Image (tube, rainbow, N blue to C red; front, side, top):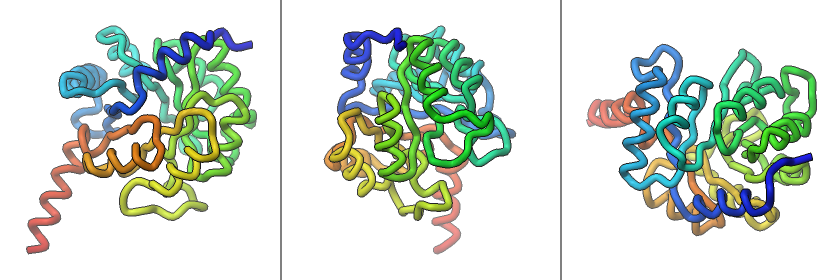
Length: 232
């Protein structure tokens, strides 16, 4: 049984309504892949007006949680399998234990590495008193995740699974379909590269918008500029 009261859930989500969440992550082997760097990056984006944070890795999450009480979405990318965003019940429980308010996990219809159903991870997170953000790639996956108890549904994995085409920018069509089909908040995430695109996501029905690369990944930002100059 969930230990989350409706009042707690509503209050937490209200802090994110119509606001910006910034994803603070670095890839393995990059100079910024360090919990202290992630913590400082998180504090920097909060100064810029972010209402919430999304980060991965247990040490990073603990470091951020010790520094701020803003809504924190946590995840753990692990393993070689296609499903590697908080892929098992064990991962979900560990992320919840860091103090993250919301645990993000892969909610696509692909097999999970521990062989357990998606519902097992959702139930484990709820037992820990945390909310669940279901990262999906299709409308059907979002509907199923909400049916199983996910508290938020994100378009995070649209374009990153074999069954979904990759749009140039955010998948606004999926945002609109999910927003029309679900009673739970829809999070626009994935390839939101400009302020205008973020605003368009809200107009399409998103409850909140997650931006990562365009704010917190200087390697990619530099590549965009360098590549453009080489084209001239």
